[in-house]
Length: 164
Image (cartoon, rainbow, N blue to C red; front, side, top):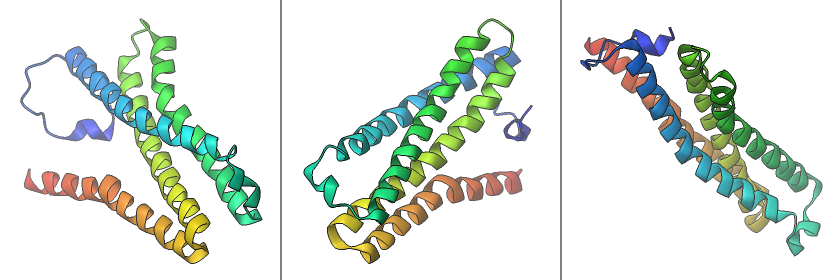
């Protein structure tokens, strides 16, 4: 199946179908967590346009705002796609494909959420403290989030593989 399945077995006594069901349930739980945060962030971004200060945004800030709304919409779409796939592929025996696709979509969702978070930090700091502060804040969120969400798991995975 996917490269994720190349890891050694974890000692569970389960059939392939049970493993796929467990993997699917784990992905759904992770999506629930991500979706809640994504919806809150998207809602916040959508309300910005209705604030009095919105008219004061310069061209750069408007561009950043529109990119953020697009990224938030993308993150929401990516997070909901596994549910749509499940509904449309229900009872077609496509669980292996569904788990593989949902795993990839969840990773893409996390990337979109990280970009949205970093951009939101950039946007808010830019509004309050100016462009340099915005770049520092956005860059810091992007670097720290990238390390926490992507680099650290890669190192853990490499260490686990080296151990075996």
